[in-house]
Image (cartoon, rainbow, N blue to C red; front, top):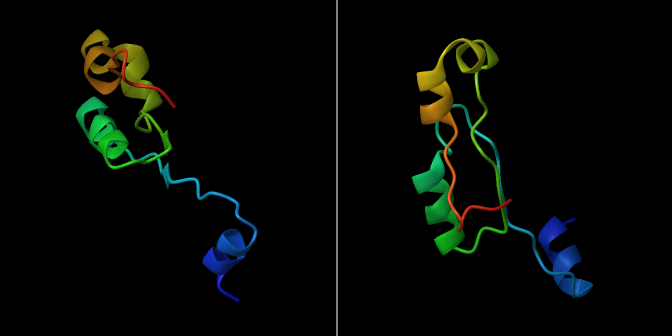
Length: 70
């Protein structure tokens, strides 16, 4: 059974989802995915210890802008 044919048959639109990736899905990459019609884009998986202990890590690991949305 082809899962893609099930969606096409029922006229259910595809939802293109980008998986969260450690230290990779930063803002420029998320915006690039949006440009290529990805519907749901995750922020990067953040290493909690670094995020808690370092202001620099918080500023670098998690950035956003008005065009950035789920």
